[in-house]
Length: 414
Image (cartoon, rainbow, N blue to C red; front, side):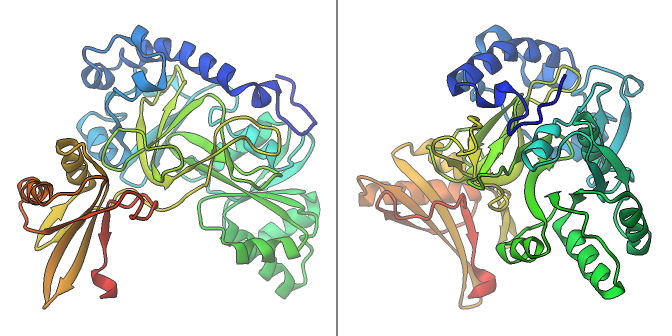
């Protein structure tokens, strides 16, 4: 496709949200049909009629697939856990990520859907881009390489490290763009200053894979580089990205992003912090409700940059809050089971502390109509679900923090 040289990558970024929603869910049934041709999805989605999954409410009835479960699933049915209905040789490249988790790369242009993120960060056709993400085994390097090339950029496949060689490449090719971690960009700048090398051609950057706190953002900007964050995974590609408006991360096109209560597949209330669950409309390797373990929250309205897709706050921590109490694991799924058994409760938060050199659990529950009978019933359920004793406190709605935590381990600070 022809790439725009204007603010927006194409017209679909600014379409009415209702039109986007209708288009995504009109495509979803066919994606589900293709997914269910693979044995893993055929088993997980047994009894599901794809023709009926045409809304967010219907999608939320399907089970989530937890990324944390993928290593065991891939080991049991190599290489892709039974979730891909094509042989490895049908793909362009084959990767592995820690776990191990095995990821195939489709043969089409921009298979990781990253060109939009680069365009939003100011990259344009004809730019020279220094790509310092690793090209070794994991997909990060190729993810940004192919996205930049789909945008019409020339790519220097530098990878991380070896700053001396990178200085030579930068001085020879004068790249205006940088792709990589924010940490390595700082290393590169500091090393260039120390060695009296010129890296001033770099004017814009897209960073990912590490924290990018305001202090580092300010430092990078002081060197004349406008840096924007991208959020993605090795499985899904680019999920969301910063824009010039700097008012939250805009969700990428061609994916359906849900925010659910950790340990469940149930969407949170609007604005609440929850776990990211992604469905991709990829016929070659669809993901159906992949729960990636990262927390975020949706922002109201649309971005001032004109893009109309859902905005999120970005990464807000991990949803996997499993902890060990008195030698036994307590998981978010167990707290979700308590909610299921007591629908009159709102948010729940299990607080774990040390008292007299012993682990102590307190389950704090938001409730509009607290009673002693309810507290006793929830106390009994807590013991039944976790096989551990603990106290229960019923609190008023809105009294618990909106941070996505359902288990708070406070032992290290007590």
